[in-house]
Structure formats: C-alpha cells, structure tokens
Length: 180
Image (cartoon, rainbow, N blue to C red):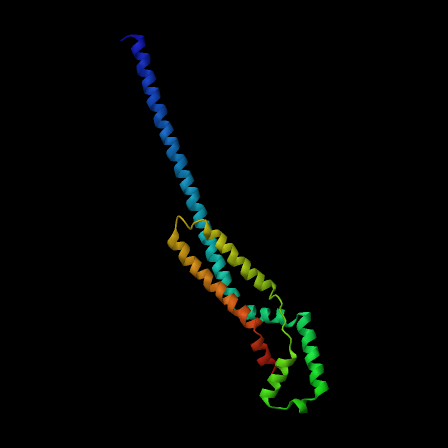
C-alpha cells in the first residue's frame, strides 16, 4: 500500500469518528435538555401541590372572618354605624318599634351605600398563591393540555370560593339583616 491510500483511509476514519462524536454530542445535549425540562416540570408540579395544600388550609373560617373584619374595621363603616346609632337615639327605640319590618325599613333607609375593598393579609396571600399557580401551570398549557385543564378547574374552584366569600361580605342585604 502506498502512503496516499493510507492517508485517505485515515482521513475517512477520522471523518466518520467526528460525525459519530457530533451525533453523540447532540444526543447528549438533547437528553440533558429533556432531563432539565422534566426536572423543572417535576419542580413545578411539587410547587403546585404545595400551593394547593396551602390554599386548602387557607379556606377556613379565618379567611371569611378576616374578610368580614376588614369590612367592619373600615372608617366608613364605623362612621355609618355611629350615625345609625345616633339616629336611633334621636328617634327613640319606642318610635321605631320592636316590629322587625319597621326596624329593617328604618335601617335600610338610614344606611348609605358604601363601597370598599375587601383586603387583608390572608386574602392577599390567598390570591397571590392562586396567581402563582396560574403562572406556573401556564407554561405547560401546550405540552400537557389535560393536566392544565385539571389544575385550571381546581384553581377556579379556589377562586370561586374567594369570590363567593367576597360577595357575601360585600352584600348590603346581608349586613342590613345582621344589623336588624
């Protein structure tokens, strides 16, 4: 064999080895990216699990109590209750009567409409946890639509609980019934 043929064989073998190492490198890169994606996915699922457990713990009497307390302790409500108490003292309880309907009408006619935010630390924590869960799962909407729909339904239940509590706390009808 001559040296030219040996050099061509060596060049061919090194080209094949280079191509094989390039393919192996790409597969390792792809595998590491896939592993990283799955590791992030598992981390987000673990965080979602922890956040859903946190939301479940927050849905309690304390959440509703803190919502109610945040409404009652507003300056506008305190001024309104003081004004109502003064009007009852001026008019006299005997003039209003002990009839529930008269008392309800008196209270309804003397309570102005007050709008105020229902804010507290527990409510803010509750809502920020829901928002964080939506942020986490939205990245996987395209890859795992079934999982996204399940978690979205769970988060909507938690949001509806908060909305129902907020609606109940802000209801003028409920407060006039409570005052009567």
